[in-house]
Image (cartoon, rainbow, N blue to C red):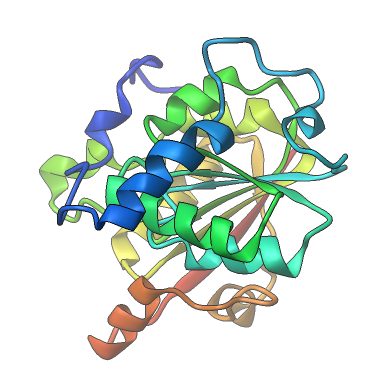
Length: 232
């Protein structure tokens, strides 16, 4: 463990909260649908997270910083038998996701629109099967590296909420952040990198839909790494 403060606000990890003004339909969707889908952190989490959904799911996955929501929506459609929690503080991204959830009639997504560490601290121990952190802000300047979401404090949060042998998936096109994550997971000691050969971390995950950030990286000549860690 490092001396990083465990109650540090996630405001250190992300930048702006809102972009262009929302269209009327998006604003209406946030007002009416977000309360129905949003986690209620004011009350204790249910011991069985399946109670968050109308159906009983045996596996729950968490995606931190879902951006435009393409990956989260894809996975929820691909696996209607699983429950998903998506966290995203950017208002425009949340509005976009909410609209798609409503349009597609998805019932297996729950969301939170603020600090991801609040969700991690609220979740019961050993309650999550998989955590996805995909193309998180790399904070490329060295003086900002402390703002990266991957830290010993947050890895300890991941370790607490993941089930034994649960997975932490990390994708990025920034070499320094990939190396940072490998080193932090190694130093934590509670995660095993599952790669056995180069193709394991150069090949996208099974069923991978791609993301707009990944497409941008490729246009700019950067390749991506897809890391998978198992909780031990």
